[in-house]
Length: 140
Image (cartoon, rainbow, N blue to C red; front, side, top):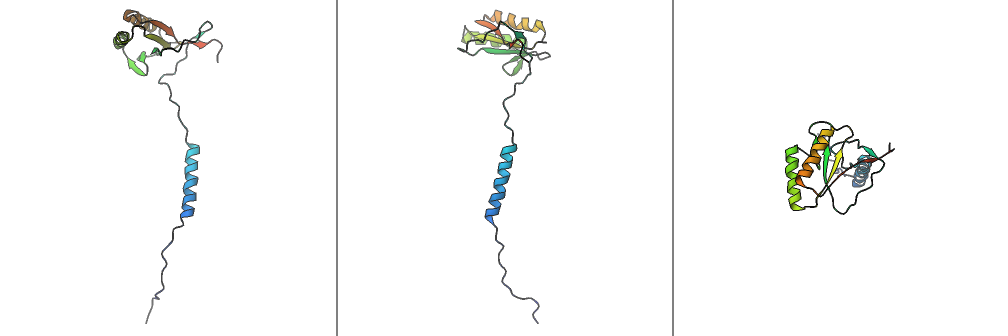
């Protein structure tokens, strides 16, 4: 008695073309739905408005000091610093380049005393020039 038949079994075949199609659709879906982020600033500032402000010359890049509305108030580029550290950084920058320029980015609502501290630190370090970032008046 023979209960099992000896049929030749075929190896299962993988249909590569269908797999490639599915993979391509998934890849296109991921590419379309992915958002590309632009570098976001660390602080969102509402700059003061000025009607008389003119764009600055782009001959040398200034040292940007950001003043926030709450502590830590001072940021040198993107890193938070104390006023003492800011003073040391300004002195080091003046030693490298006596004509170094400082640009202040202060929020409308940042304490004016903190702005004065930065200006004093820049004057003690004897920087070449001090300027401020502003928005055009009437800009929404």
